[in-house]
Length: 306
Image (cartoon, rainbow, N blue to C red; front, top):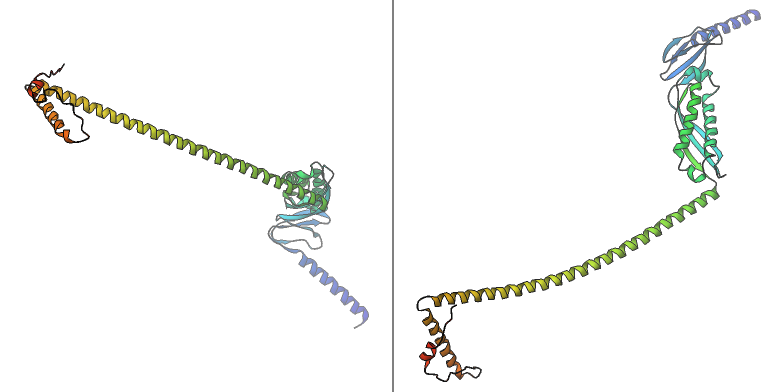
């Protein structure tokens, strides 16, 4: 084969392969949650969603492939100065989604890089308005400000920023040590205050207990005295009532026919019992002058029933 013929064969073979490759490249299968930006002769033509698509060979060109899933973008650590001129290192994560593929492809050169840079500048601005002690407490406020700023720019870039999370706020080692000493001092102070309050409460409880015990003892003694007095009074009252009942019954008996004779007989019996005890050393009995004239003595008794 002549060299010229061989060269022509190679050229036509390359052309044929190029045409085959062009036709093969015109067939595109787009996965779910992805889109392709297609240009025709340098101008935007269409946004291809999930499925099978056939392009015009050599005229249509895929210029961008975008993912519509939620993305996490790391924001690299950067040095920021707080309001009280303390340098801290802050890093975080952006969570966002491509909402408008056309704006994401043509509105900014690289939306990921742009969002990262805007997040860093916003963090520096916000941290500069807060004292170091409050930067750890104001994480949510800082994140909300970053999301607000990115959302305004994201409307032009075709992205939606869902949230921004601060991962670390690292002050210098010397500042971190000073803060740790301050925290330990505050913790020890709170412990001492709590211990003092506990001791005070314990002393108060003990004194209240002793006071209650003394009150209970005194009340018990007082109640004992009251109960004893009530018992004595009840006993005297019972004796008085019994005596009154006895006298009343004796009076009623005397008022009955023959009652005075019965009383005289009872007195005589008591008298003779007394005389019988004269032989006992401890007995003291008054003996009337007319000992044996008992009948005249009893007749001389007057019973006043009024």
